[in-house]
Length: 203
Length: 203
Image 1 (cartoon, each protein chain N blue to C red):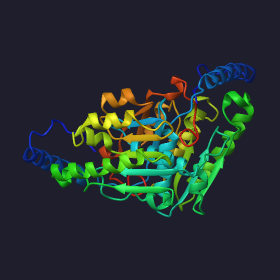
Image 2 (image 1 turned 90 degrees about the vertical axis):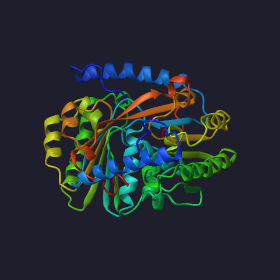
Image 3 (image 1 turned 180 degrees about the vertical axis):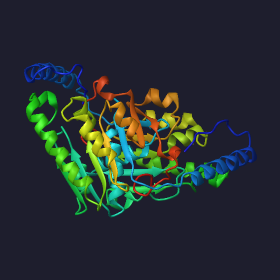
Image 4 (image 1 turned 120 degrees about the vertical axis):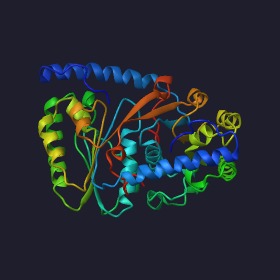
């Protein structure tokens, strides 16, 4: 919600300001009529790209609809997987971990191809409401999958399906195509202050 | 994970780049030794502030530790509440909804005070590992609670407890005090393209 433009001088002043804001907000809500599946991108150098996508996934699972997660690059399971586990969710992890640990471009590319083939299957499933492609931006930044092939598939996305793509360095063409793009910008990071990654926060 | 600095010319080149990156990453990890509870702030005009906090909450619940959520301002329950429900989680919603709907500063302030009293109780609980104060930044931007009182309590936070604060317009003093700050920056928003808020994505 918006922050106040000017501090209210009195309770009456506050009420008048809020009445005006309510009128403005209601007009905006009336203007937004369309309902359809969104192509969503979380990018930037800050934390929260995958975590916010997991939050959306949780919300979507609460609707009872089918959801799918494909995690590119990462190898370890996120602890929240066990909390979200249910028949309406399928979760795939492809790839052997960080590129600096695998050090094997051919194997990384093969894993990405496997993940993308899975993605295409969920794109084609009319019952699947939500597909999360975690770290796909990294896959594209490393040129592990041909961007034209990916963009073409995303352009042909089912109307009511939501697709969420995470990872730093999102391609300009993907940002152009997407409906909702958020940049997670790092303002302050504990790692740089000598605090290590911690269970529950980072993994 | 980092995006590549220069595209690798060959598989061998890729392997050499990744070896160097691995050395760098391992050195960084060794340098980060400290483990303690973090004061985390999600701010900015973009989406994902609360959603990423909910993702962190889910991850923390997976550790089996006690967590608490206090939602300021908002009135309606988030659908993911029912998925996260468990004995280790307590969830409070204080306040009657958006300030432009309540239009009642005195009532808003009373609700915020109620929420803050709850927060103090969780701050003092040695078994509570994670406290989410949703939209507290808005409360402070509206001057609904005295900032000095809030900052003093946060400065005295238990060492191992994580506290997450969300909402746009975070106070500079809070950013200064926090360990981890992410700005969710709006690059593209579907609302502005006439697409309305949708179940599963927005609420």
